[in-house]
Image (cartoon, rainbow, N blue to C red):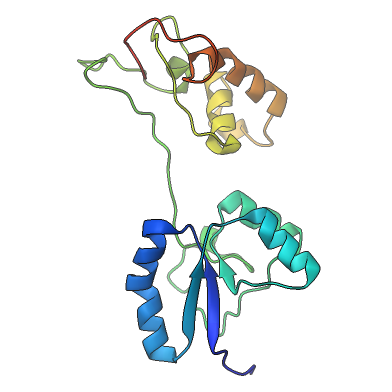
Length: 195
C-alpha cells in the first residue's frame, strides 16, 4: 500500500460549487484522514491532457463531464479507480466505470414562457421547438454539442432508439434551420413570443 499523502488536489468547477464541496466533503475528509484537500478550478480538459502527457500532473482528481471523461479514458489520461477504497455497491450498473466515478446526473428539459404560451399552447417536443412558423420567437440552446445534436435529430424525425451513431451532417443541417432564431444567430426576432 502506498504511503498516505499529506495532501490531495481536487480540481472542480470553482465558485459556489467548490464552497459546497469544502463544507460538505473536504472538511470532514481532512478531519477523518488527516490529509489536506487543496481545491483548484476551473476544470480544463486541455490542461489535464498537457499535465498527464508531460508526466507532471498537479491534480489528484478532477471533475469532468461525461463526454470528456470518456475521451480522457480513451486517451489514457486517467488511472483506474482503486475499488478497494471506493464503495460503489449502491451505484446502478450503467454508472460503473473502471476509471470514472459518476458523482451526478443531469437532464435537459424543453422550457417555455407560460405568459407567452398559456392554456397548454406551448411547443410539445423537439419538432415543435423547431417549428418557427407555428411558434415564432427566439430559441435558446446550450452552447455545446451535447444534447443539441440529439435534439436536432429528434426534431428531424429520427426515432430515439436510432439516434446513435449520430449523423453529424444531418444534425448540423437541422441546427442551421433555427440558427436565425437564436439570440446571437443573425436577424433579431420580430415577435414577442419566445420559447
